[in-house]
Amino acid sequence: MSLFHGLSVFPITPTDKDGRINSDALCLLLDRIVKAKGDSENDTSAVSGVNSIGLLGSTGGYAYLTRSERQRAVAVAADFIGGRVPLIVGIGALRTDDVQTLAKDARDAGADALLLAPVSYTPLTEEEVYQHFVAVAGTTDLPISIYNNPGTTHFTFSLDLLKRLSQIETIAAVKMPLPQGQNIEADLAQLRQNTADKDGFAIGYSGDWGCAAGLLAGADTWYSVVGGLFPSQAMKLAKSAQAGDAQEVQRIDQFFQPLWTLFKEFGGMRVMYAAANILSLSNAAPHLPILPLGAADQERVSKAINALNELD
Image (cartoon, helix red, strand yellow):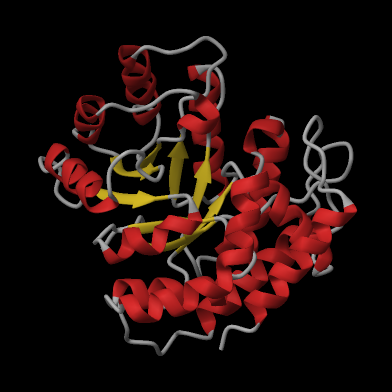
């Protein structure tokens, strides 16, 4: 089983107002994740703890950080984790040469794998995205997951492009958005058919409120925002889904519903920053121009946390 399987959790990357990484706060978040894995070391069910940590994803604000702060974040995380949980690092940037540099930086700092979204100001063609991935894959032997996130990049990977990319040796997985206009079983079947030439190519989903359904349908991975702050609760949902226990998934999912509502309204980053601060795990805000949630909405986040804490 590759590291692009199971529950992959994505924490925020706390910084000060000048964009400098707060290493103590980052380590507090990572400690929750690592300890959640440690609590399940003797678990023999389908999912045993958190399977990977996704550093510098969208929730981690990678696009807002300088190269040096990204380097620092990866170095701090890799040193703290110490190989206990695989570390996947986001390397998206506007220019191909910058992404190549970030890929090397992540490898040198201790990353186990990479996550790449085609970030661009000018809309990209499929051939441009293909050549972008080919160039990056040629600079590192670390496995790469394709990050298909049209909500932020405004680029949607076609099935044909995913098939081409899956044939590149080091491209091992894809992180998909929840499907629009069809059910997740049909979407997953199409993806499997179009990447069948690559043994072990892993297909996972983001969009937390639909990912349990994805695991129930047979997806390989849940790329989880909520798991970056609430790993134990996310593990319970993931385990039940991979065990095929739809009734238990439905029961557990009810405790997440207030958070899912907030995620859909504000996006996971804003909500997770507020939640981390409420839990006294950080005292950070998203990078401007993104504004923190107001007092009334922070109170809603507090109530959502209380609801999640009722999960037994």
